[in-house]
Length: 483
Image (cartoon, rainbow, N blue to C red; front, side, top):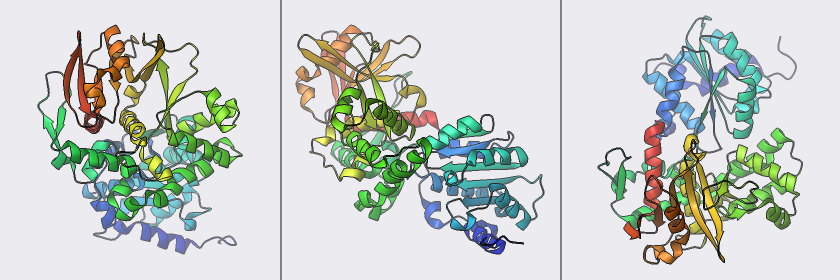
């Protein structure tokens, strides 16, 4: 007998059938999601989905609006294309009100009873927006242990909560898969501009491929678009979202994370304070900051401020980068650090469109370079910035990679959204001094607006490359490794 106020089972079954059109012969996912370009990470994600020999759930983690739901739908279509019967696949979006109050196990059993599946039948079950279920990790672990022949795949947008609970409760039962924002290379592919704007050059022996732009002006125009909205697949593919990213993206990307996800996870009482603090960081992305300075400027206590930084980084909204000196040594008492948005498009979603000639472009270009490296968990650990005092001057290098084993610098990059430094090397004192001190494994690089080439400073050879092409090169070569 149904409990008072409980939604009748027959209505739940109707909703399940509506959400799973492939249960009918010839049914597929909806045409819009089927026709969307696949993320570069799709192949490696599907490899996990198809690997059914080990009883583990795949947990797809990522910030909001990066294409997780679309990837789940495309995974369903890939299984159908493999010949998996549609009735062997269940998709559930757990933010659907009709499923409220029902356990994951109850929903799975309803699916199995509908199609008369035995306990040994190979099945695939996809749970979308799993963070809406309280204690989801406990329920999912129980399902993995109970239904050994079912491959469970879950996704959610509360990246901080999902990652923490997955590791705490799902050890040995869950495999995390992080889906980051679009890289610049992915953006060009989604926008249908990659083939027209990029030519791959023959690779030197032992080196990653190099690329050139057919028109650096056209590539820069797409780069400006990427900085403003291109980190989000929906904005690239949907003209309405692209025309007004603040209206369509701000609520999901920022407000739900800052006002709902993080407060529920960490017990944050003053959500408006957290929101204001994040706005400060987003507006000043790429700036060097100190806890003392931030506390003074924001009026937030130092310890609470450090907690906020930790929460925002766990939510994949920001990345803190640590400082080294001219000898490439970490500070014993580091008083400063840099903060970058993990997705430069967040700034436009908060504060509006940024044109190519506006002052904020320099900071956004630097943020974009760092955001490409975030797609490699191994590389990002090796990256720092350098800053030191020499005489009366402060010298800096925007990006320094240290060998994780020896802690010696491997390469250094100075990021500019201007061609001025190409002819005026006085602007490059920091990277020239740093390169002269260290035996780098590759030429120091200075990014520009349009200029490319090489120059020599004594015994040091410096390479110049447009920032947009450098971002593409990082992303494309990292994706070659990732997929």
